[in-house]
Image (cartoon, rainbow, N blue to C red; front, top):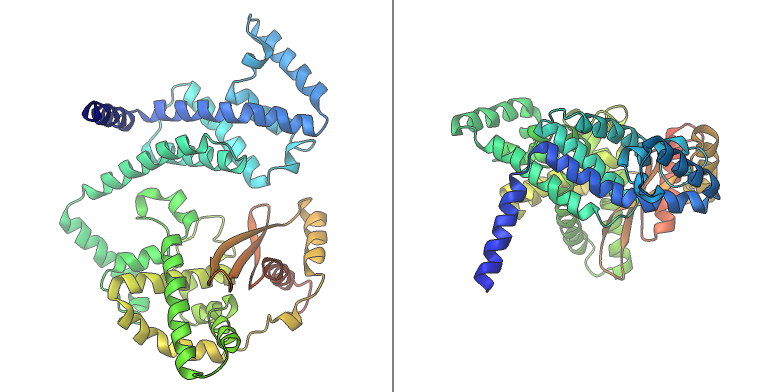
Length: 409
């Protein structure tokens, strides 16, 4: 019985792998319509727009001239996405950002191309599935898991395409990376240059160029943060042996603070080599949050490449430098009403409220440190790091005000 079940699952997986790009997008659009239909109706009702919605359903039924119910007629994903566009100002701007509206418009075009039987390349398919997945995640729909399966299969196929290249091509690729990153490799002697390249690759670049990458740097950033926390802890323990735990924690957190790491990243000129998506190119190379995250990813990559001893040898002078860096954005310089002032600016300038996102956590349960980004319309304006989320949010808002020139830096 177990053998039959296993065989059935293997056949199902094989069939799923063999789906055409067109069929895979079609299935994902169907999953999107299943999720968006109840979401659209719910949000319209919440905004007291029920009469308009009922009228819209009736109009669609009249146009279709069919015996189907209003509910059946409004299941078309193109209809649903166009309703979001039509009622954006009245309803959906309250729940979605302009970034999600961009996804809606993109998916309307995808659906039209799919309906006209246009061909989809593997890259086009990955982009379409990623956009569907991101919208489903935003509206908290369970269908995102099924679409993610499709997306991961396409990504796997894209990676397999790259793996078909010969060993000589791989060697040529390594040499090309070494030439591109020669200046940085002279400072950090990676054995495998691809690991360094991955550490420099932001997720936005990977989404836009899946065939040119072997993944983004988020996992390496997580690893690097852990390695840095450990080595910084060991460093302050040895240097300040006998001090109370609270003092040691303060010393360590200064060393691994976002501001300190960003300054070291600037000294290494990491911004020059970061691989960023088009949206991040404008400010990303000088963004303190991206710089500090990239430095952590490089630390994680170097640990995987050469081990803890090599990281310690490279990192020890840096730890001494980090300890002496003057951090300007300390708690005494943070405006108590920074969040309110930044919200006023965002509402006045973009008609949107700022959103705060915890992008990473570190430390033990009783000694957590939160890293928070503040975004408006999907763009990052500031970053804060503190032992309390609200304090980290306040720091992020304060940094945003400084970057905008609304307060002195």
